[in-house]
Image 1 (cartoon, helix red, strand yellow):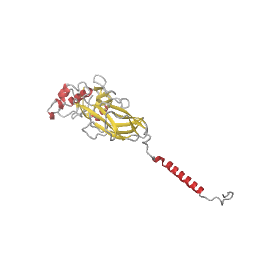
Image 2 (cartoon, one colour):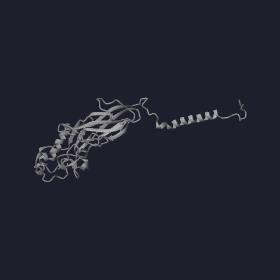
Image 3 (cartoon, one colour):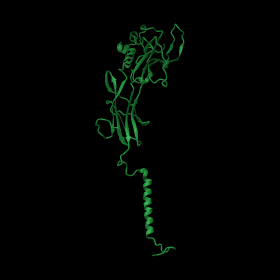
Image 4 (cartoon, one colour):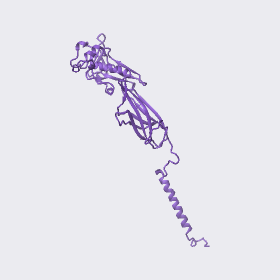
Length: 313
């Protein structure tokens, strides 16, 4: 693999300049998990991979892509044919995460995490320390991610209750129709071995029965708290519904939390006395009663003696 722009004051004597490439093209959606390189990463004697499309495989994703102008070709011993793709279509480092959060990291260069590459990419402006090396930072984070020490989130303390009610242990098993309820879930992130509140505005929540009745983003009112919440009103439809939090993002462990709750019928004495949809029927009853009263009154007080064929008493 070749191409890319080397950083200024890079130690050229530390690597072979023929089969080298440079890149700082980090896959943007995972910059919340991996640090974006401040200086280009050195890829020596590496190859670029073409990943499967998202339609065919949603579990694999690029971590570091090839820089603009980079390309991958066969070695000098074989045909010097350049691949059909180049630039950011090539993936130098890729991650794979299964549905059960098992992880694998693929690297296109065996020497990328070697001592020579790390020493060559040190930053003189930061004292040439090993921590200033872009290769060192990327390789360290790759190992942490693969060993579940980075990009790990978890959901705990899932709860729900009627608005205004106090929590008294277990979650309610059912709610009546058109009742205001509130849903809570705590999400933490593992960082440096400790669990801290996860801060995000894209945690999707659904209240569903076959089709979602609510599909919104949970609210995090206090960024220093791990609690995400949302208030909703139960529908008029009866049945078994689910609270669903399906949170899947590149580089993060998957959260798939589901909780069932029933929406039940009102008691016989909880229905409204007069339903607005019944107003035409109510009016029909009173019109019929009024018409009957007028007819009987008119019949009782009418004089039928003048009518031919009617005998007067």
